[in-house]
Length: 135
Image (cartoon, rainbow, N blue to C red; front, side, top):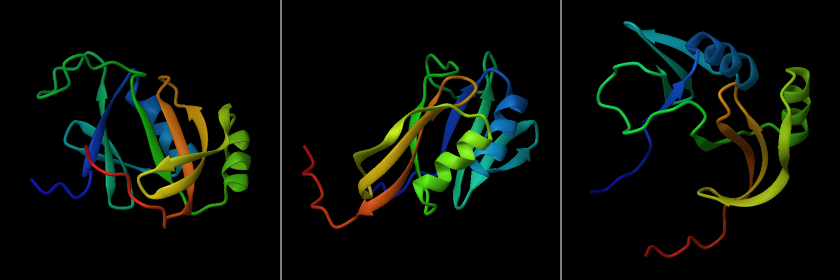
C-alpha cells in the first residue's frame, strides 16, 4: 500500500446538532448533509458525525463520544486562536506548548468539544526537521 492522506474521520457524538453548532462556530467548519448523515467539512477534509447508539455500519468496535484526540493545523497566530476560543466561551486546557507533529515542529493549544474529545489546534513552526525513521 501507498497511503498518502487521510480522507475523513468519524466522530461518535452524543448530539449531532450540538456538535455541528460547536464545530461551525468555534472552528469555522461547514456542516453538510448526505441523505440522513451529517458531516463537517474544512478545506479538502471531512469529519463524519455518527450519533451515539446509531446502527451505521461499518463502525468502530466500541464507538463512544469523547474518545477522540486529534490535531488541526491553522495559519492563524495562536494569540488569535486563543482570543477566539475565549470569545466562544471555550476553556483552553493547555498551551501554547511546543510539540512534534507530522508537519514538523508545532505550537499547540488544547481544548475539548462538547463530548469531551480533545482538540489540538497548532501552528507549524519548523517543517525542516528530519523525519523520524519508520520501525
